[in-house]
Image 1 (spheres, rainbow, N blue to C red):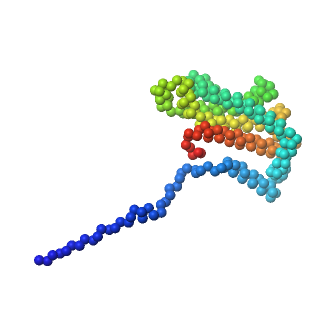
Image 2: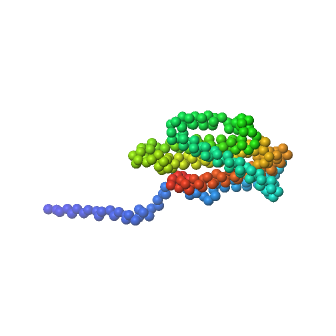
Image 3: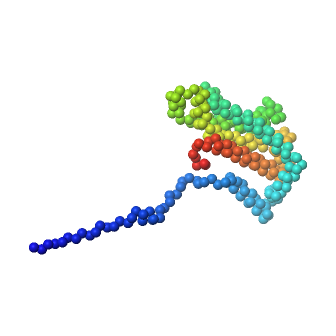
Length: 285
């Protein structure tokens, strides 16, 4: 009788787990915009300044229409030294600040009254949207008849330009608060004041800051027009006088000052927003 010996092949040896870990892995690409670069918002203006200087040095720009940056800088230094630019800046800041303070207060109070009560919404929201549909600068002749040609009508127009975006964005944020938070506050037995402080204000702050940024910009945009109407001082008046004498360098000085103030004020609002809303995790932070 023949015996057959069956031999089995040894089991295959698997590579150790460490070998798998040594294989290169493809890193997944992040979808977020990445870390914030320091002073990144100055890149665009600096690039524009470099292009302006390069074109002026190469003779591509007419000096009579668009003076070189160094010419504008010399003109600005001369106006600052003789005190003309200083007085005009202070006057413009006072007008813009007064109108902005009134518009900010009115926008917030009207948004709270309209966003928290049905009666307030019925009385206020439609009126504000009607006001928004009317060009604000078109109200200038009527306000001159009502308030005179002095400072009062200028401040009133700036206040209207400011309060509309603040009201619209704050009211939209209030209306967008999830109703489940209201139900939670009712279950917890919060008072009206506690409800506004702990639910309404944090929920409306993002929209409020959007309106605040638009209001700050609007105050400067309205100011440049208003200061050319029967004004005897201010940056707009300085630019209007320069137009009559064909001084394009003085006009550019005024525009640069307006732009710098607008950029600074917007950056201040952004900084405050980032501090106040530090609890939010967004693409910007």
